[in-house]
Length: 308
Ligand SMILES: C[S@@+](CC[C@H](N)C(=O)[O-])C[C@H]1O[C@@H](n2cnc3c(N)ncnc32)[C@H](O)[C@@H]1O
Image (cartoon, rainbow, N blue to C red):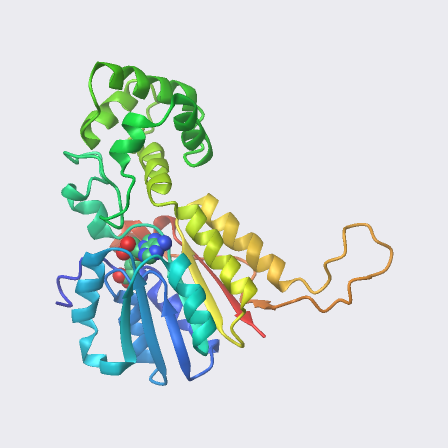
């Protein structure tokens, strides 16, 4: 099973290093269990913890349950969204660590029938196959102004208007059924981007919308802020600037002791608002050798925070 691992965990040594600072005992929450690579290494390295792994994808849960069964009662898998499950766990358990490795797994991207890729014969992109809205619904039913919004906000695509118009014009002739069709429609109106498929950012934007990825991150950060787990370490791996900005801003906010508005003459807030400290100012990124081994790590950024 080890050799055929469907997803290589990114920044693995760096993640382990970040959790060296957490209490030796307690419940560790892996919000994005995936194919269990991070969880396996964490269970091995920290023998005093019990790990709860969350994923909304039943295939990931099934794979990891098998991979990690030898840890017996030290491992538990829970299927669902981390924005629903993390708040419950924070209330019920003494949490010592929380990891989130956002985005999709390599297997989700590579399995054409999951409809994430330019080569897919369908348009789906749901991490949870039982979720209501798929990429097909968005591409074929969203009004043009909504398409513009997601292409502008989530893809940060300059040609968002042209791209939305091209989609709407194409679907008036016939529904857009596949990743290949969508990529071809977009390639005609988007500027060429070297070896990268010009539709990459727009595919990612549709995926973000289908899975409400930014809303999920916001609600997880809100849950941690409302119920900060004492002395716990939080590590979050992001893959694009929108995600990273959310994590960076929240960790900064949590580390501020004084929350007086800028320009006040003397602190009036009590100067005791910090919830903890950021572990390192800068995000941790992959070294050249990891990027070579696993190109997916190219855009990964790890940020860590420790609560008081
Ligand atoms: C990048 S992969 C994680 C890989 C994992 N760290 C490993 O080592 O195999 C992200 C996983 O998180 C899951 N996921 C993403 N967002 C989620 C959410 N909001 N709730 C639950 N699972 C989520 C995806 O289904 C996917 O399996």
